[in-house]
Picture (cartoon, rainbow, N blue to C red):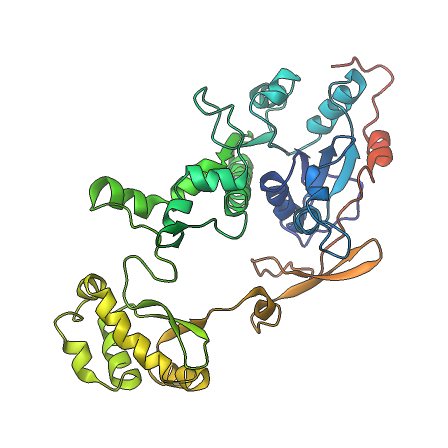
Length: 389
């Protein structure tokens, strides 16, 4: 479908229209990615706006969450419980390729916007419903905020330090659901390109988190039990963890095979006998005797400053990384940023994770609340002889 905005033929989703009734993070991240690919995204908000607008003011007075997930969209304020606005929303959806929503299960159906019914009315429409736990009676009414899902899915149970489980430091369940929703929508668009018919797709925060828990799940159900929190160590590979240098810096190393292990012992430890020690001759043996292994490696790290450690690891061709804080990441040589303007202020935001030939190398602005309400009402005004839905 086409829109009245400037054409952007170089973008893969140029000419497609997405209508979204969304809050917070998961759905806005999905539609934000679609906007980055060229789709026109019309964001439907209540009079008080998406509550993510007020999450923080870290971006020079603006919400970091909102700018990250809503740049390049149009904002229209309407109340679909009011007949006139409900009719407008139906017209928006009738002209859309994709409809995305993450309200509480059943909320939109009760208002007359059930996804299945919308697809019956508009066979080419793709609908994407995002929930916390799915829509079954057993879990459909549970409130699903990111940290709660981290706990319910077992993610927290395998994170943190021994004896001290910890929250993953970003809203990973929301982010994962947004990514899965993007994949689902793109898959449905690919199918529609072949069949001409839209699909209904759905994702939940819990399903995404559970998928990531497959390895601990298999260990728990069929092995010797899921690993407990390991701190800065890998539960199944050794050595794979953090060690402190003479100048109190933390360096993480990863040994993935026996060739690397022998090279590490020869070049870094300067002791070939460690490689052939029966306690350390295989990964399984090293994991079993991890405490003894860590003592040997820890002593070698503690005797040298960071610069010497990095030089030796490089000579041994060992994978390593420094334990960095956000202060360090801001200056990281691999970090890519694009400019974004927010009400006249120029900000540097982290660039999208996919590099593509259609990159614009800057973000379009995030909309003010209701910024496009008047223009959208005019564009999608009812014909004089239209019967209200």
